[in-house]
Amino acid sequence: MAERGEAHQALREATRADHEALDGMFGRFDLGDRDAYRAFLTAHAMALPAVEAALDAAGFADALPDWPERHRADAIAADLAALGAPLPAPLASPAIADAAACWGAAYVLEGSRLGGAFLARQVADAWPKSYLGTSQTPGRWRAFLSALDDAIATPQDIASAGATARAVFALFGEAGRRQLETT
Image (cartoon, rainbow, N blue to C red; front, side):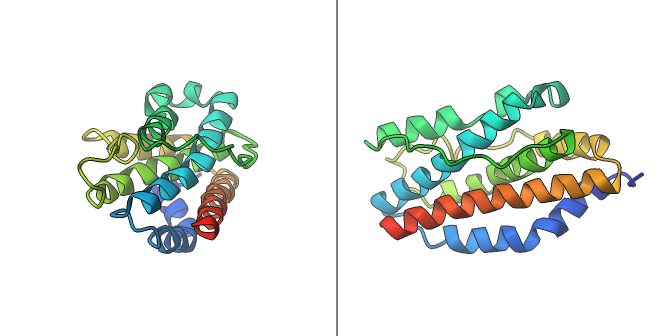
């Protein structure tokens, strides 16, 4: 059994390089430029809704009861519509093989919410930012990590969560690369 806090710390370590690479790639989008911001949102819209849907199909709301309220697919769709951009076809979500894999996928999505609050400050006030502006309420990130730590207790669970988290990072990376190639 893992010690309390070990699961989310193990996920952080297992995905550090993936996270840094993704931050570097998405850092190439100038969020102060309307077209680049639209491309950034389009890339996220290629990945996020697919992962949310996969978590829904896997029954993640049974593990995290407020999961449905954490969804952001509607926010990103609204932002793209306000910018006059169509919603892109989603990429295929990585397979979510078990409960631990759900936690790994959700870890990436919930972590991106924290980064979104920082990125929202780079976007012009006149532009929509429902997606980036959906910040965590106080204590919600800690509550998520606590639930993750309670749910993932074995080395096998940590490995499954880590593999899925890396696959979700890779999905966002693929979406970002596709948008950078077209802009």
